[in-house]
Image 1: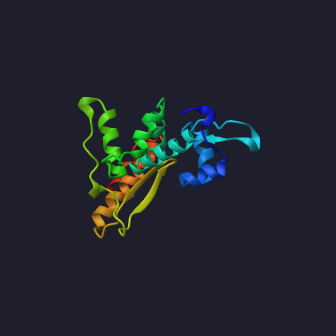
Image 2 (image 1 turned 90 degrees about the horizontal axis):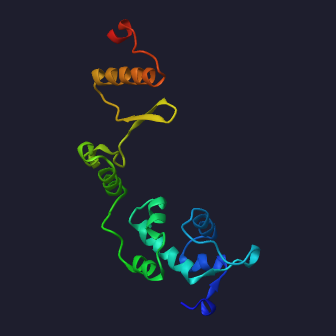
Image 3 (image 1 turned 120 degrees about the horizontal axis):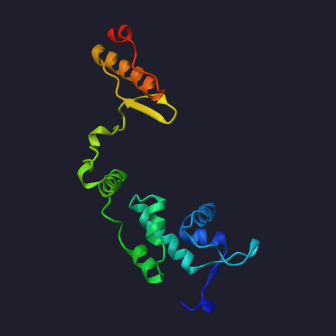
Length: 178
């Protein structure tokens, strides 16, 4: 596109055309998803390339991709590449779970690649889960049980996990016999 004839927009106009907020535009610029606007201060201008990039970002977000992956995919693309993404249907990735499974499969060493995360292992809407903090940044999620044996086992597990994460040796034998 000829730069002299390229239409320019203020941030409000660009945001409205792209269906996002001006705050989102600023965030994407800060995160490296969009190039910095031209001009300075209140006279910053955005181009049709910015609009096309926002459309490509929306399409990739519809495929549940995280922003870091979107940034990588958009890096170095010309107008034709951006248009191809913006106009293509979302990838077959139909859930965040599918994306996590594909990343795990691609990043693990061949011999140690984990199998997919079973969707049955994830909380279902309407089920009650209990969360317990084992250490800062480490939580255990479980469904409460009506089995006293299972509840005692979970309590022992929590106690021992907290000790292990605090760097303490396993509990004494009296505590283990309870």
